Amino acid sequence: FTQVEKIYLSTAEQIGYRRDMEIGIPGFSCKYCCISNRKGLCRFFPSRRRTLPSKTIDLYNHLRRCSMCPKEIKEKILQYNVENLDSDPMEDYHKDFFDRVWGRLYLHKKKTVSK
Image (tube, rainbow, N blue to C red):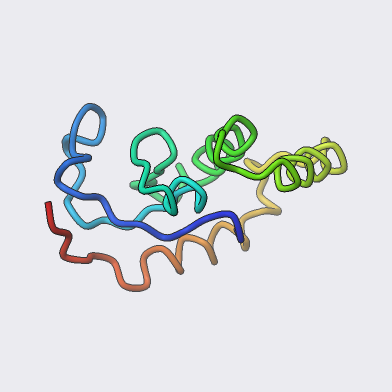
């Protein structure tokens, strides 16, 4: 997850399917979009532990297409995917990894976020 930054849901982002999410809940975002202060589809807020694997797939898909992500990083991501084609992030053997990620996200659950 070196291509990711921890973020918190802001009031301005509480629209659409995020409308019912609590302000200040943690999530993760493409670090390149964070550096450019982009918001939107590059920001992911898994509301339950079981949704985390699908959000990491969404992040992978974002990084592949992100115009801010360096070409070398995209190549590494694609190479990793090719090397691990038989690996499904939804499988149980990834449970420990996703448990650690979830723990890091929710260690300090809420943050007061300004508008």
